[in-house]
Length: 374
Image 1 (cartoon, rainbow, N blue to C red):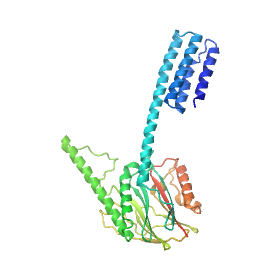
Image 2: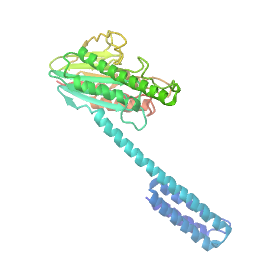
Image 3: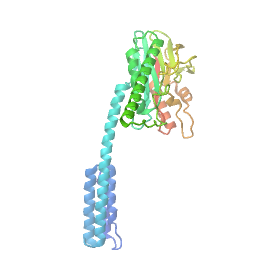
């Protein structure tokens, strides 16, 4: 990797020695360590910097002598700039190591929290993808999970208010509650009520911890705690934190799909004759708002035959905007590609979504495709 910087040192040295006295190319030798820093580590950069300094010494001894003011100035400047280049390369390596550790922890958290959906579960073929909006994050506030019951499969797709790592705790809570209870409740309304209670309890505990922290701050400093940042979410405020979700039950021996929509974007049903939006008549409020008013969880049933597919997604997909602030046309894209297999369909949608937003999402985005096999 250092062949080009070494070649530059040789060429600049030879040309400078052979040039007329009024032409000085020696200062260009600093290009060699600067180029090395972009392609190699600090040791290689320091080695090339020393070679460039030696080459400048040779030029000075051949042309003007090492005691001339010109060559002394060039040598001093070369030493200072080379030291800065090597130092910056060391800082860059340290930052890259820290970033690698953060990425490793993030990937481990993803594997534990958002387990990959199996390719096959019962009579269903599944495919999914997740895109986190927060830089360098692998997971955030969107979530999905699947669980087997005695006679079918249950799916959960949800979206925590907020995005990125700040919403990770609520996502972990809901996923844990779903995995623990999905096979214990005989009907979807019972499961939805249990999940809403779990989220409400967690938010209440978080609000209590926040109030205790403020009270402790007031006691220690004998003056009121500073007002919270108006742009920061406050879990003390009722209704400020919630999770939209859709719960789906797919019996193994049927041709139907049952779902409860808790304030979530409606799934799409992909059939050979077109794409249908599974809009529910009376969607329930998002999970976590059940304490504000009585909630009735109404199950909606739709046809789901062999070969049919469900596309469940979060609002980060349909609210993604391009440079002209236009929303992502999900239904239009799905209609054009609905004949593709689930994995291929999601790969196309993923690439197209990233191209639509210029590879920078404003919110987390997740999609799950479920196909009933013959």
